[in-house]
Length: 340
Image (cartoon, rainbow, N blue to C red):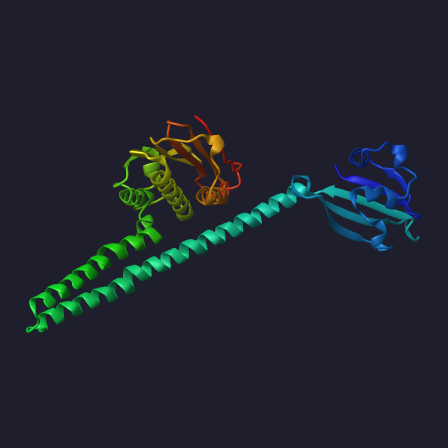
């Protein structure tokens, strides 16, 4: 499939293979006998810029966006034993797909590093809240209790006010700081996805009922003592479900949300979050930051996602993810907004 040109000592084309003629979309008589500089200019290649170099290897980028092509250019002398070069061989190879694959791999690695950094920062802040800050607040609560105990002559209203401050501070320490810590990074993910999602669902119980539909085959993979789900996979599923529940609270007007976890086949898991809310016209929907984040996380693991909705029929977010990191490049990342 490489385009090959043979140039004589004056850089005129004396031969060209079929791939070269097809790529140029020219008949042989419009190529053979013409200067290589004029022929290759059609591809944006300036042959004169390489001068009389004996060996040339270069990459040529043509066009932008979907029309962008990357060409590997190789120029070598045609030698005969004991004589000077009698011409040059020019070979052009289309390496666009290879470059796209390399760029995709670099982008995936960058996204993975970004995800790891984000989760690491979340975990560190959560641990800070759960340990040092909670311990310091607990110490202040004890000190306020000691003041209340030692201040014998304090007016009753002052003691009551002091006790109220101590109780409020203890409530903040025990509840608010713990909730903030969990929202930043659910420590239960270390045990498994199911307990983390159940605690996540409790956050939305005041707004709608959360129902779980878990395939036994999926539960076997999510066993606490021998969890077969990688931490990146657990984190991705958790964040996807978190975004879907948040959208249901803000936009759906739903009374029930069902979270489904299933083993689609031996290599992929499927996650669905479906509500019974008002739905929407898919033609009017535009992916916002939350859905873009979902897409980035799912694409990073080589998965696919689909948002299905229709007026009066609720909304369902479906995500398919590979179980193994080795399969991350297998399924093409697909995203779609569609009606029922």
